[in-house]
Image (cartoon, rainbow, N blue to C red):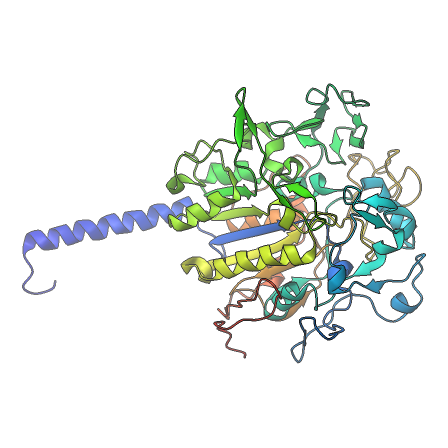
Length: 532
């Protein structure tokens, strides 16, 4: 006991210590005692990039004059990219080609469930130009598109930041979409490992032509969105005021339910979620920015918000958080669904949620047609620079991943781990994705195309390429395992998803930050990297 200290002061000190210990214990309990050093996980979920589209020639960049230069570190591992005959005698109708930084804005490619399967042509991988290449006018009539463009790829002179993150942290070259198809299936697979259990309706789109809903399907003027109660298209979420056409609701559970039950703070934070008005009690999502194609793009895109498909995890009227101090908690009226600005309000309030999904506003989400790689780069770098400056950085992991391939060419045939045989399937022939097996759930042909995944963390392996077979629901599985949440069951792919753990080294953190220039993706001053 310290000398010369009054008994009442000592008693007060003991009470303060006890209160502090109780607080620490309560916080530990609320975070469910992570099984790894990762106490904070931030998933930055971007849009529409195949692996070859961003990493075809990694780590070798052309380095033309006037563009940010990229020079790989000695000993940088190679990836399963494009080289040799794939560049010179590719079986597709056009060869792969480098997209210069001056051509960062591209047309959106065809990335529908069936079109993507056709591109792989029974494993020959020779129909990308024919099946997913865009013809005619795109970008809302602003750009003439040529189907050969689907073979284009960027290198480290344009996607400079992404390549630099790969140099200093860890990446996968064997990460696939859980199923084929566009954004909605990819978003649902991230949080639930599940696209089955959907019921569609045309109520929101009653005035639109061609919307037909049955007990197990939804067909609209935009195509087939639901088949055999499985979502394969970009149907809008049912429990969202800002959905403006055909909708679907999902049954079952998602990772949000598991996190809520365990008391782990969490949230999905999306640009433009905050209403710009309320009309007859319904939220209006009117925020927009100029896209890379010179056309205004809404910040909020409803079918990129997966939790709004589930009644239990939705915030239909886009209610704001009760206060910054309760963001991510079970007591907040927003029910864990937020605007992107709310994430930074929580950070300022020293209330960083343990699990956060970040979705950029449309003009910065990387989706071809309205958000080019340079707009995406600015968002990624500004976000990651800010996260690295937080005191929680030492126990944080940032995952950069993508919801689908946009139909961009990738030379790796995905393994068939789930079969499906509907008129919308075409991977191994018209109407088929592998041979039908007992118990197969229709409309879940997978894996889908290969897409990038990077881990930025003090605990990530350095300059490392992992070849472990993983898919989008591997992120879901990491969350479940790290916070001891259990499995979702009911056919979720979380049960069989590959592990992300080989991307980490939990025995030896390197703790080096990497601060980049948002405009160029090049390294700036102020980084602390013990290997440089």
